[in-house]
Length: 79
Image (cartoon, rainbow, N blue to C red; front, side):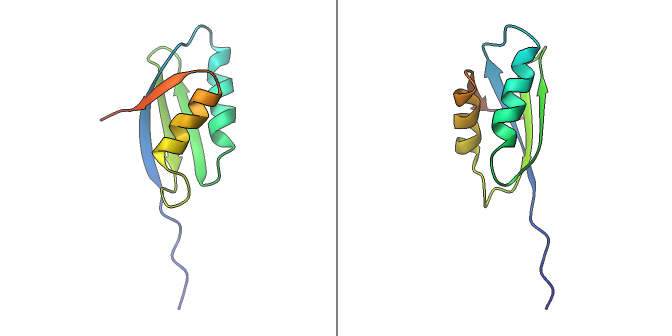
């Protein structure tokens, strides 16, 4: 029997408190450290944070907490 590849989900968050483009790197670094996260993209102009992750390893609550640890408030977005 062969192993199935890990599942990946794209979750989208809205973050507040951006003051400069360097905020992008802080969030990407903090969220990128989480196990199960494959990719993090932060859109400075819109405050949108897109995260590709394995939901069995990293939950959306953990991602929100990591964004908070970087110094920004975030919520899971419906789209």
